Image (cartoon, rainbow, N blue to C red; front, side, top):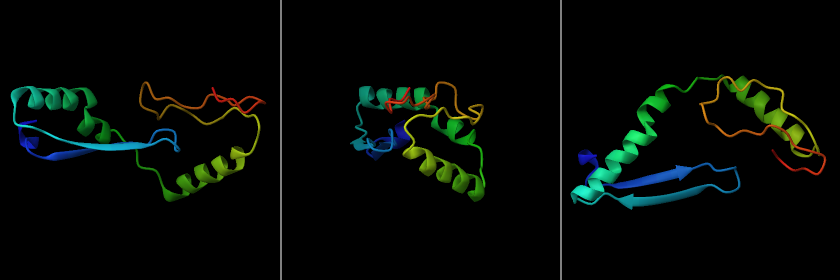
Length: 103
């Protein structure tokens, strides 16, 4: 966190695809600000999480996006893919009912 003192940090969240958010903040020099940023770094564990990402081929991305496009207008469905590769605690679509409610 001391390396970030005086710097501006941009935070971004993809959200659900329609409700992403982005904001920035500057890290002040006072100990409380540096301490809060250090706590954020500890909790987010960004370097470790980025290191755990799994490379996927462009073909897999294309297949996933094609499936998503096909299912977008279908009133109800239950995804059949594996969730083993998701980080623990990740939210994902379990099913969509006949009223297009997502669970």
